[in-house]
Length: 365
Image (tube, rainbow, N blue to C red):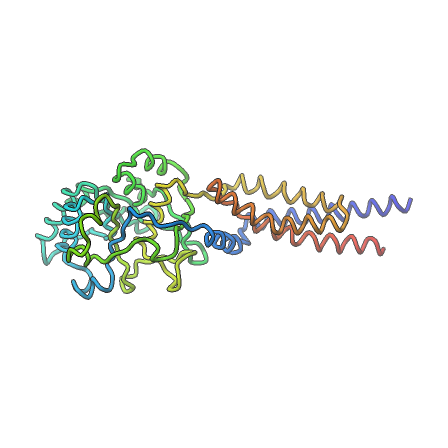
C-alpha cells in the first residue's frame, strides 16, 4: 500500500513539474526570452561557416584615399559617370552604384546628363531606392537615371541587439514592390530565373556571410580613374561601387564585422549577392516548425526523466545539451535552415536539477 502511495506521489510530482516546464517553454517561445542566446549560438555557428570570396566580384570603394584625391563628399556626378564609362569600356559585368541619386546636381547639370548617358550606355547598372519608413513612398533616383537602370531597395534588418543578420528579399512602399539590390544585381547579370525565385521566396532571410569586413576584393575608385586597374582585371566582373570611408556612415554591424565592429553597406550587399547566387541563403524556422520541434522534444525528455535511472538521465541530459546546438548548426549548414535551440536547451537545463530535487525529496519522505 505504501509503495502504491509513493508511486502515486512520484507521478504527481512529475506531472506538476512537466506542466510547469511546458508552460515555461510556451511562454519563453512566445516572448522570445532567449533571443540573445539564440543570436549568440547563431553568431558562433557563423564563425565556422565562412567561404572564399569569389574572384569575379569587386568592390570599388569610395574610401579615404579617393576622398583625399577627388575631394569631400558628395562628388560631382562627373566622377561616377567617368567610372561607369571606363567599366563599360573594359567590359565589366553588372554594376551596383550604391549611392542615392534622388536630387539633381544644381551646380553642375551637365554632370547629371553625362551620368544618365553612362548608365544607359553600360546597360547593366543597378541603383538603390531609399525606403524612409513603412508605407511611405520610396525615394527613387531621378527619372533620367532610373530609366536606364534596375532599381532595388537596400534595407537590412537590425535585431534587438543592434546586429544585422537578415535582409528583406522584397519591400513595398504601398504602391511599388522592390526586390533587394542583390537580387536586381543577379538579374542584371543574366540570372533572371534565380533572381525571380529568390524574390518569390521567404521575405526575411539570414545572410550567410562569407567573412568579416574586407573579405571581398576591394579597390579604390581612384584605381579606375587613374587607370591602375587594367581592363583585364575588370572584364566580366560584378562590380559594386559604394562608400567604405568611415566618415560617410554607410555601415552595418554584423556577426563577423571584424575588429572595427562594422561592415560597409556595399559589402553587406556583396554578401547577399554571393550567397543568393550560390544558393546558400538561409531561412529561420517558422513558428510552426519551432513549436513542432521544441514541444515534442522537451516532452519526450521529461518522459525519459521519469523512466530512466539517474545515471542514464544524466547521460541523456549531457547528450541533449551538446547535441541541440550541434543539430541546429548542421541543419543550417546542410539544409540552409536555422532552428533557434536556446528555449528548448534552457528548459532541459532546468528540468534535470528540478526533477532530481523532487525525486530526492520523495525518496527521503
